[in-house]
Length: 186
Image (cartoon, rainbow, N blue to C red):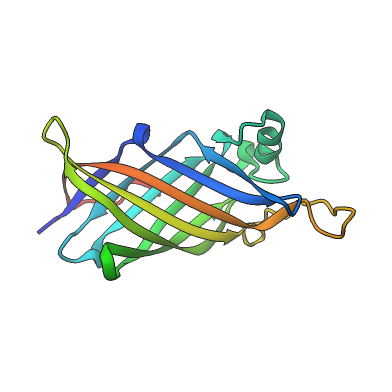
């Protein structure tokens, strides 16, 4: 049985992040311009994979000054590096309908392994007879692993920006076809 190609419904999906600020609360943000596809094999999840390409310049926190700083060379260097890319390398089925997705994340030209813990949020037919599935994925990365080193010391001895970045991805997908070809994201 061939794998099925599932296109991500961008209007019903999000890529969000959070990072500690001033050693107090988390700053939350999201990316608004990205695309991706899932290739699923229900009978053999190990053959499944996901490819996502995120426009680094589409970062939004609700603070235009912070957004400009995050796009700058001190952080994402969006003008030069352009895209954040995630390509899975393996998918393992866990108990309770959860999946462990291993892959490589590339930010600013630096590639590191990153695992996603994924849960199937639901799967059903839509009002037009199409098949949809929704997933929630979580990960945590150390920003310094990707060369995102900028920071400022605080008077209390702490640092302005925390090192850990929490990632939460919610996607709704629609099955588009059987698939036997090459991966979409390079």
